[in-house]
Length: 294
Image (cartoon, rainbow, N blue to C red; front, side, top):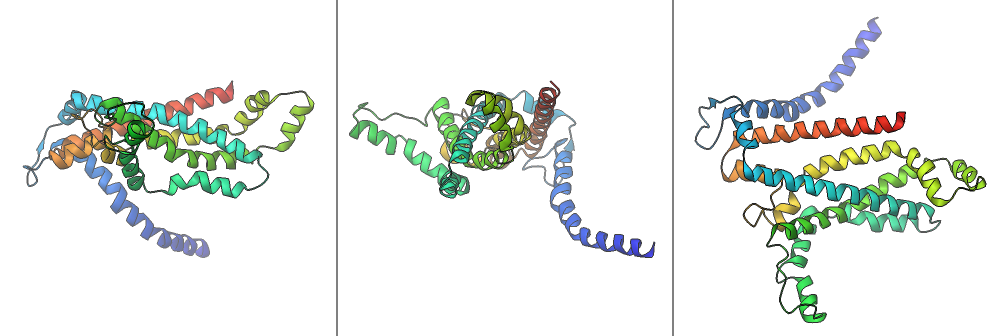
C-alpha cells in the first residue's frame, strides 16, 4: 500500500507540470473565450463589458458576410478533402506497388507538406497574379489570349487558386498515411483473391478499402478539421477580396477581431464553428460505423 501511494504521488508530480501548462494555455483560454462570447467586447469596452447573452451569436448568424465566409469554407472543404484523399490514396497504391526507389517517391511527394504555407501561398499568388507567371505564358509564349486574365480579382477565381494550393499541399500527407495503412493489409488476402480469379477493381473494393477503413475515417476527420481551419493561403492570396467575397471563417474572424475590434463577435463565431465541426465529426463516425455493421 505504501509503495502504491508513493508511485501514485510520483506519477502525479510528473504529470503536474504538463497539466498546469495545458490548463493555463489551453483550458483557460477556451473558457475565457466562451465567457467573452456572451459580452459586448470591443475596443471601447476593455475596462467594462456589458452582458448581452446570445446577442453575439445572433449577430453572427444574421451577418451576410459570415454566410459568404461559411459557404466558402464549406466549398473549400468539400473540394479539397475528397481530392486530397483520392489522389493521395492513388499515389500511395502506386508507390506500394513499386519495388525500388520507394523512399525517393515518398520524399518527392512529401516535400509540399513540409513547405511553408506562407512561401507556397506567395508562390501561387505570383503565378496566378494578373501580371504573374501564368498570364505571361498564356499571353506572350502560348498566345492563347491577348489580355491578362484577372484570376484573383473575383470570387471563384480566388477560391479556385486557394483550393488548388490546399490539394497540392495535402497530397503528400495523405500518401504517407495511406501508404502506412496499405502495408498492414495482409498480402495473403490478395494472393487468395487472385487464385479465385478476382480482378484489380474487385481486390480494391473487397480487400483494400475494408482493410484501411479506419485510416480513411481518420484522414476524413482530420482533413475536415483542416479544411475549416484554412487561413494562411486565403489571407495571403486574396486577402478576402474583392469585397470580402473570398473570406473563409478564420479570415473573417480575424478581420472582425483585429480590424473591427469585435472580440465578442469573433468569440461567438469560433464556438459556432467548433459546434459545426463536432456535429460533422459525429456524423462521419456514425456513417463509418453503419458501413462496418453493414
